[in-house]
Image (cartoon, rainbow, N blue to C red; front, top):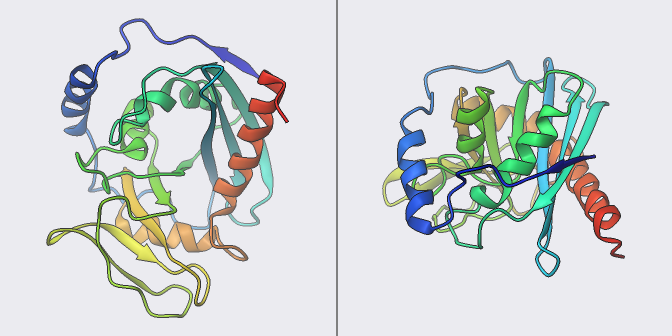
Length: 231
């Protein structure tokens, strides 16, 4: 487990954080297909918080994309680096997530975030932020549609519908299990929306959420318990 300090010069106010988003958003790459779904490695990242103790734990879990077997994993723990502000959650998570990724013994390949990429009020959620900072292809797979609207996809697995900000498509509502609530997929960096959905389906052979997210969620929660002595 890696211990993380808040980086020097890290934004401390909403205005500073929004200025960073404005600066980095223009670096998002949207015209690359990214790695083919079901090939190479794919890495899930997730975080868990203990706000009372001011602790955040991040996990990165690398899977073989073909068989979904675990290849490597790493965790990092640090102080919460930004207050809770909707639309700026990446600033609470990025330092520890980067540390967990840096601690991996193998290249991560595509990174799947439990959250948003372009499906974000400022079109720069965690997946996009992380992709720009690392140069890695990234996607966001979220549990809810945030502030956006969508029509319920058809019942079968693989059905989807646009996730909309007004008339702008910012992602897809994607059915990963028949007759089960969809997940909400968006591009982060260096991939396409069609491939982001294909990756998500390849990662959900049995459950609603990607195996990357499920495994990273369990690992970061365990790391938080170990760091805080919690239940």
